[in-house]
Image 1 (cartoon, rainbow, N blue to C red):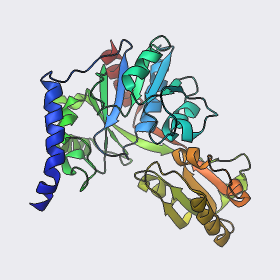
Image 2 (tube, rainbow, N blue to C red):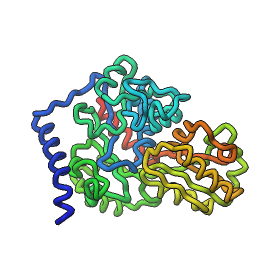
Image 3 (cartoon, rainbow, N blue to C red):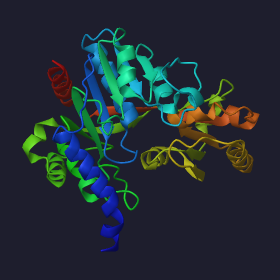
Image 4 (cartoon, helix red, strand yellow):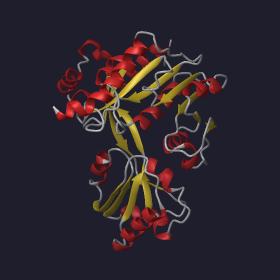
Length: 341
């Protein structure tokens, strides 16, 4: 009972806002350029960034010559519209847009808090715009809405903030054109997929529910001074500032014994003291490799004074969203291209 009372004001606000948009009292604009929104209903942790990269690459493969990604650039200090370059600082453009630019260099990546303005600025530069995390930006009506759901935390069994991790009404899942269930376990069976679709209440549109897993690649150095000999260590120190680092910990446990872990909030802006603490851990474990995520690596590289012991031993684990079979990837591609027509 207490939980319901606490959550009621937030639920009511979301419900009224949703009704105002659906009955036309509040208006949404559709940009001139076709847009694909990749969003979620929870606060982080669903793998939007690697899936954004996957969609950008898929669109390029499918004949879209000029693809763009537009993000709010969460956590950046810069203001207004900005084109992201591969040598930018995360402080000015945000860690996720910078990661996308580095991983998909052929894409035009831009940041702008006002997504409508951003789309207008990209109008003559792109054939299609992928919107990162714009599902709650109701002023913009995307042509295609794709919503991410974490396999380990279905939105229909979660709670609104601040008790749970939902930032939107779980029923808004039905406003999506497609749902991607991410971070699925290896060897996912058909019966498990069907059961999960029922848990989400999406039986009526199950053909547009897709399942992906996360694949990690061999760690890469964060700094130019990185010494690849540390890749052969049997011990690791994990530094993460993402919503959910469980998949990374599981991946690392196959090759390393995690001797220390530093877990910071999502999009954490590293301080000099944070770096000093990691440096102290590195001295305690003289041969351990230091591993972080690629998103964290963007922000870590902004620190002015990084000790040599960290520059030589800090690596990030590249991440990639993957379908289970080529046929499933092709099915999603067909959906995407059909929805954009």
